[in-house]
Image 1 (cartoon, one colour):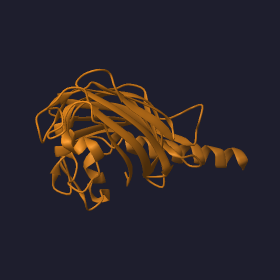
Image 2 (cartoon, rainbow, N blue to C red):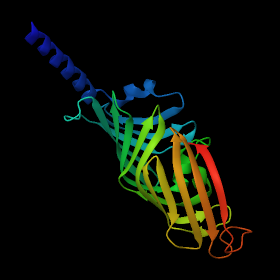
Image 3 (cartoon, helix red, strand yellow):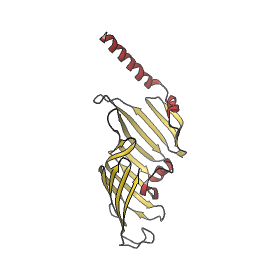
Image 4 (cartoon, rainbow, N blue to C red):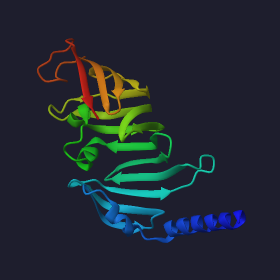
Length: 237
C-alpha cells in the first residue's frame, strides 16, 4: 500500500512538472494582476518571456523567466529573471520559499535611470533618483522582502555619469554600500560632496541623514561652493 501511494505521488508530481514544461506561457495571462498587461507572451510556463510589458500604462520593457528546482532546499522555488528595456539590463534569481522571506539576488545590473523612470508607474517612489540621470551598475545585490516590502538590502552599487535633470549639472560618481538594514551612500570625488546614512526602520520604510556640499559653484543652482546642506529624510519604498 505504501509503495503504491509513493508511486502515485511520484506520478502526480511528474505530471505537474511535465505540464509546466510544455504548457504555453499564454495560459498565465488571466493570472496577471489587473495593473499588468503583457503584449506578447512567448515560450512555456517553465521557460518563457513577456514582451511589451505594461504596468499601469507604463511601457516597462520585457521580462524573461526560467523556473528551477533546488535539491538542497526542496521547499524553495528559484526563478531566473532577466529584465530589459532599451539598453538597460538586470539579471537575477528570485527565491520564493514556503517558510522563509522572499529574496531577489541580482547578479548583474546595468540600468539607465531614464529607462527605469519610464518603465515604472508615475506613483512609484524613486526618491533622489527621480531628479537624476545617469547609469546604475551593480553586481551581487541581494534584496529581502517581508509581506512584499523591502526589509533588507546587501551589496554595493555605483551611479556614474550622474546629471541633475533640473540644472543639467554633472556630479559623481556616487557609491552605495548596504549591509542589511543600514547603508551609506557617498561620492567618489567630483564637483559635489554627497554623504548619506540610510536605515530601514521597518519593511518598506526608511530614514536618512543627508549632507550635500558643492565643491565648485554652479553644481546646485543658487548655492555657492563651500556651503553645506544637511537634512533628515524619511519615506517609504
